[in-house]
Length: 138
Image (cartoon, rainbow, N blue to C red):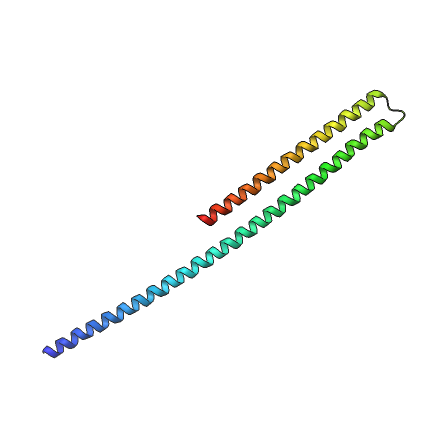
């Protein structure tokens, strides 16, 4: 009787050890799987953020270049208006003054637009950088 009781105890101990080993292996597998999922998610997030930053920077640069070019064209047009008014023999003094005023106003408007675009570009870049930093840190 005593020996069968010992056998039962041994079987219980063996079963408990096997269950503990299985639980430990399952835990290692779960932790490894979780680490892989987190690493993959972080990698995807970083790639998405980099793509967003690149797209925003490209769009901002293109818009800035277009606005600067448009401003340059506008200033050239304003100068041409003044030159035409000055060179035209039939132009009266009042026509020349109106042409000059229009040219100055056009140049000033172009300059204001350029400043606004530069400010918007800077704000957009700063906001994108701050958002990216916050997302990466958090």
